[in-house]
Structure formats: structure tokens, C-alpha cells
Amino acid sequence: MANKRTIKAKDMVNDIRAGLTNLELMDRYKLSAKGLQSIFSKLIEAKAVNDGELDGRTAAADDTVGLDQKREARRNYCVVRLPVYEAENLIVEGHVRDITEKGLQVAGLSAAVGQGKTLLLQAADFADIHPFAFEAHCRWVKSESDPDESVAGFEITDISDGAMQELQKLIQALTICG
Image (cartoon, rainbow, N blue to C red; front, top):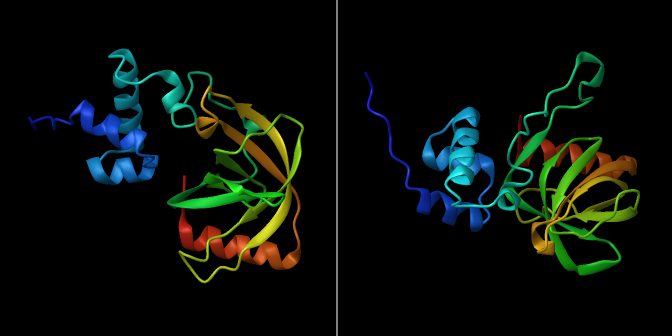
């Protein structure tokens, strides 16, 4: 029988609070997605973290879909911290958690369901991808008392052909499919 590895809760919590993505955590601790979810559950049960700290990271018990509700596009999880800005307010920076050609999940930008925004992605620091903007419509929000922890889902509603090409390059270069 193989020995179980020990992962220090303190180290995991520090990494979560430092902003490491699920993929970075899985790589650092050599975990599967199922193993990471198990650890998240244990951290919540032990009250080492609160539910809000893991919003957008954990699969809810009712997070299953029927065949008629299947996602149109598979999620692509960012392997780097990818900045996103509101085109009208470049001072406030959020970051992309996952992205497809149809939409994206963003942390750190305030939004309200139904609100339209022009978003700007700037990935030039990571790859040969030019900054690009597109129109997006907020479909859902998970708000926290700390705005930096709020997460919102946006549907891309209008994007130029050139911006779509940059988006496709970004997805191919900076994400892994989930």
C-alpha cells in the first residue's frame, strides 16, 4: 500500500491567498483536479479557509448539467495571471480565470448581472499577442465583501475579426483546456 503524501494546510492556504490558480496548485502539490477539490473541502471543514475564498474554484454539489445544458465551449484555464481591464477605467485591473471564444470568467472587476462592458485584454508580456478589446455582457456575479475577490462571468457579445484572431492566439498560447 502506498504511503499518503502530507500537504501542510498552512502552505496550501498561503498559496490560495497568494492568488495561485487551481492549475498552479495542482502542479505544485502534484494533485489531480479531484484531489484538489478534496483538499478544498477539507480546508473548509477545518475552517482554514472560508467558502468565499474558494468561490469560483470549487465545483458545487449541483454543478452538473444534463445533455440539454451542455456548455457550447470547453473552458480554457489561464496558466498565467492574465490582466483584464474595463476600457473606460484602465486603473482597475482584474484577471481572467478561464476563457473561451464565447466568454470569460473574471476576478477583481466589479459588475452587475445584465451590465455591458468593453473589456481590454493585454497579454503582450506573455506572448506575441496584441492588446484587444471586445464588448461583453455580464451573465452572473459572485460578490464578496472584498471587491478583489468578486468573480463575474461575461458573454462576449461583439468582437472584431482582428480581436478574435488575438483571442484565439491567446487561448492557444496561455491556457489549458479543462
